[in-house]
Length: 279
Image (cartoon, helix red, strand yellow):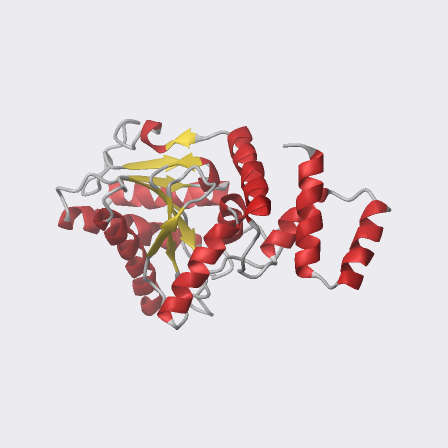
């Protein structure tokens, strides 16, 4: 995609977001500075409410997102080695079904990836915010926000905690997104917080298993960002829930990829797995 294409998209979404006077002011400041137009486009899209986009504009935007997706490269979920294939032996844990992967879920080619959503289901409206919700919506494009908005309109209420909703993946490598609203931890971690997080992971696995086209799922660390759930207990809850779910569904062949985005995530999950091994 050319710089001209990005510039056209920026122009449309400036006009879409602002009054004529505000748009003219933004253009004047943009032309007089070293504006990063792609960053501006990302900010305009992040802060945009759901709503119709002309077909020609949407096509050009989705071509840009597809080009960027291909440039980032895709990682095949089915090619990532499971824990068993890496030589891990852990009693009462499905090491043959689970892979640990230090990577970005927006690059994972899987049947579904998981989004840690908020109860509006519309993504993060803070431009540049480093949360998985923002990253997924930015890579998927505005049709994901529109589908989520339609779900909330039909439901007539915010999304409850610990449920799971499946949408299309749009410009993501993943075919679908499984959205869940995890618990918000305020103060000391409680038994109720722990149950809600386990319920979120169980809902994700139940939804994936019930969908005829989902056999590979990329998990994120639900609630461990701005929702405040401590990473180490969250990792243990995730692994415990996966273990119990496969005990209850021994015939199921879901393949789970747990995305360990940062070193602190990898440390938490490796420690949680080690504790299961030594238990």
